[in-house]
Amino acid sequence: MNLLSNLCHGRSSGVPRMALSVGGRDCLRAGDTCSSDDTCSPRLRTLRQCVAGDGSVKLGPGARNQCENAMTALLSTPLHGCQCKRGMKKEKNCLSIYWSLHQSVLHESEVTTVNRCLDAAKACNIDETCQKLRTEYVSACIQPSARSGPCNRPKCNKALRKFFDRVPPDYTHELLFCPCTDTACAERRRQTIVPSCSYEDKDKPNCLAQLRICKADYVCRSRWAQFQYDCQPSEQSASGCKQENYGACLLAYTGLIGSTITPNYLDNSTSNVGPWCSCTASGNHREQCNEFLTFFHDNVCLKNAILAFGNGSDVKTGASQNGMPSPATDNQSPNLATTAPGVSMETEQNILRAQIPTQVNENDRLWGDEGDSTLPSPSLSDHGAEPIRLSLLLGLGWLLPILLLSDQ
Image (cartoon, rainbow, N blue to C red; front, side):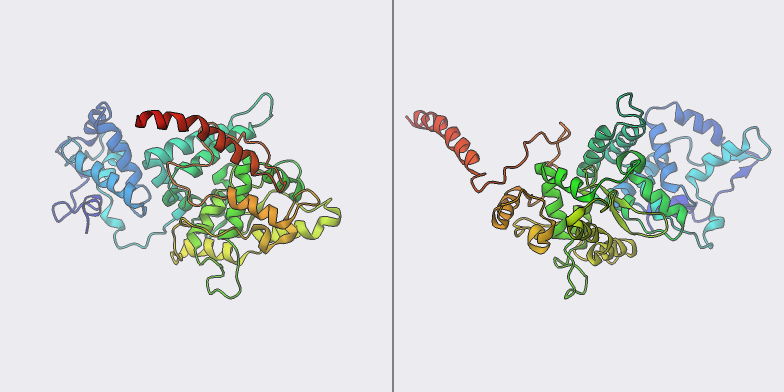
């Protein structure tokens, strides 16, 4: 049994101390002393997060280390060994401090209900990066805007993209894909991305119109292609995924959040997900639109990936590795192409091959600090790559004389 478990259950000396006594060090005073100390105060706050919920919280490896470090540090403060007097003033406050250090042994034999969604929020609060960026996007998404009304959606989406790009999946996936057995938990999970600003609107736009806007941006287009590749369903695969990689599918899914086709849970009674759009007014393209929605609503790979994350049976939890083959975007669902008339499918696929990322890591993000992509809409002509080649040649032209002079 590790140090944190021992101390949280009052077993540091083999038997739990008595919380109420007629003597001993006062936890209330010890708590005041700790709160006024710049070193002790943050450690006590961390510990309270660690033991919240009757000690049933299950944290990631990094967060658990922080918990144990905080507990170890508090052993050398007046809080260690403190007690409370029965009938004392502010007895309840005193006992709350005591039980932060010694989780009640009365609960040891009880079966506690683990709420992984709550646990995920606590784990994020303990991690500095996760807590900071989560606070940033929540603030951005609930702040009213004089120009945009109830909220500033572009600013909200920018903050969301930053959060899901920079915070490790250990935290983001737990927040977004934690398993729920009741509507309260499911609603908390649905509210993760502040859907009132980032997702919902008065009316649902046409899905193909939203997809066209997405494909006009290099980054969104690449994320959509990545999602189609990593979450491509397969009836021949036992996992339901052609790539046999649930983790990559979930990572590709989160890559869409903050875009014009942001997906989210459709309600608080199921785990069904999809973008906020409809196929109304699709005209002759109704079938194409339905195929787009089906890739979210009826995708066995995506559904299995979310379910497997919840029950811990993930398949290859890592993301797609370097050397990813060309995406199956328009190859697997040709009707989803929203390109201009007359553009060959081969050209479309060549463009996507050049755009799709092979690996997204902490130091190489598609969406940077500058926010929304400012790249021009991709040219869909067969010679779209020529300007890039020309710019490379011009760049090498001035570099060559410098290299030659340095050799002399």
